[in-house]
Image (cartoon, rainbow over all chains, first blue to last red; front, side):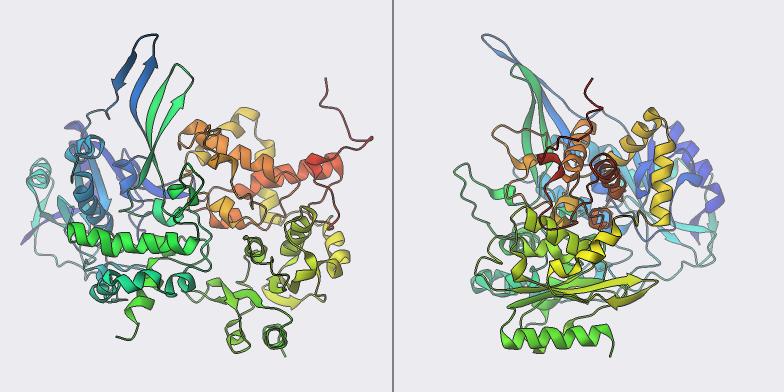
Length: 337
Length: 276
C-alpha cells in the first residue's frame, strides 16, 4: 500500500498549499511557450509534455537580478542591497532532470561564497517532481548517470499510476514530508501500481568522455573544430540549460544613480572572454564549444565530482542548427582507445 | 535523376576539379525530419548531401565569417530564392564577392523540391524579380492581418508578452545572414549602449534595434523565427518593416546585387509624409 494522489484531487491540494502560504508554480503553456509559471488550478498546468521548453533554473537564478541600488553623492556613495522577497514557493510537476540541475548548481553557488540569491530561493522552495513515463529522442539522463526517476534535488517524488488515475506519493526530505502532511487527508492508501518509467537509452560513456577530456592532449584535438563547424555562436544551449550558471555584472543607470545587476552570460559568446585590450583568448567558436564541454564534463567534475549536465537534452532539442552536447560526447565516446 | 542526386554529382565534380573548395549544403540531422548544415570538402563526402522539403534553413550566413572567401577561392552553397536574395544583399554591402559563390539553387513547392537553373546570383534575376509581388504565405498573412487589426495598445501588449519571453540568447542574430557585424551594437560596451539585462526595457531595446537594422534587408527566410528557442514570432516584425520599405520606397530586399540599402539612400521623389 502506498499513498496516492488522484488527479481529480489535485485542485484540493493546490488550495491547501496555497492557503498555507505557498505560491504554486507548474509547467504552463502561455504565449506560445511552455515554462514554469504561477498557477491557480490544475487546469492551467501542462503536465502532458515531456518537459517545458524553459528550465526551472529560471526561477532560482534569474536572467537579470537586481543586486544593489546605488546613488553617488558628492562625498559618498549610498548603497542598498536588494534581495529577493521572502516567499514560500512550491514547484509542482518538475522533471527529474530539472530538479537534479538545482542540486548540481547548489555545489557551485555554495562553494567558496554562498550566493544569497540562489540559496534564499532554494530554502524557500519545495520541489515536487513527477517521474517520467515518456521521453523523446533528445532525452539523455541515463547517459549522465541519472534516470527518469532520479530523486536528486527533489523533496517529493510522484510516480504516475499505471491506470492513469493519479500518482504514488513518495516523500524524500523533511521539507517534502511536511508538505505532504499538509494534504494527508486528501491522499488515500491504495495498492495501485506505478507506470513503468520512460526508457531512455544510454548514448555515450560519460566516464570515458571525462577521462579523454582530462588528458591534456585532448585540448588541442582537431575534434573540436569538426564538431562545432556549424555552431552559429548563439547562447540558446546555455540559456536553456538547467545547470549553466555563468553571469556578468552590469551597472545600469545614469551618472549619479542606478542598479547593479547580475545578468546571464554565455561561454558561447565572443564577448564572454574579450579582454579590454581587444585580445580574445577564445577567439573562435570551436574554442568556445570546447570550453563548454570541458567545463561540464572535466572541470566541474574535477571540482565537485558531478557532471554539470542533468541530461535534459534541451541543448540539442532547441538548437537552431541541430548541434548540442549529445553528439559531441558521442563522438568522443566512440573514439578508439 | 532526382535533384538530390544531380546536385551530389555536380558538387563532387566541382570539388574534384577544384572549382570550389567547399560546398555548404544540408545533411541528415539528429532525427528523421531534421536537416543540418554540412560542410563538404571532398567528392567522397558529397554523398552526405540531402535535398528535400525539410531543407529550409538559409545557409548564406555561413559565407560571411571572416576569412572564408579571403583566399579568392569559390564556395558552393545550397540556396532557396530567399538565400539568393541574401547573397545579393551581401554583395551590395560588400560582404561577399558573388563570383566566388556557386549556387545550387532549389525551391520547395507543395512539399517537393525543384531545381532552379543558374549558378551565379545574377542568373536568378528574373526569378527574384517575379517574387516581388508574391507576398506572404496565407498563414503568415493571417497573422500579419491579425496584428494590423489590433489597436496600438493591444498590439503593444501583444509584443510585450512576446518580448517578455526573450532570453537574449541572440539566436535570431547569429542565424541571420544579414547580422554579420563583427561587433553588434549590443556588444559595444565602452560605454554599454544597449542594456544587456533581459528586463522589459532591455528586451524591447534589443528586438527593436534588430528590427530597425533589418529594415529593407530582411529576405523573409524565417530563420530567426525558427531559431528562437522561446517562440517569439520574429518574422512578423521583420515583415512589417519589409512592407514599409516596399510600400514607401518600392524596395524589395535583395532584388539585385546593385540595389542600394533603403535606409542609406535618398531619392528626389521619396515620400516625405512623415515630415510635419
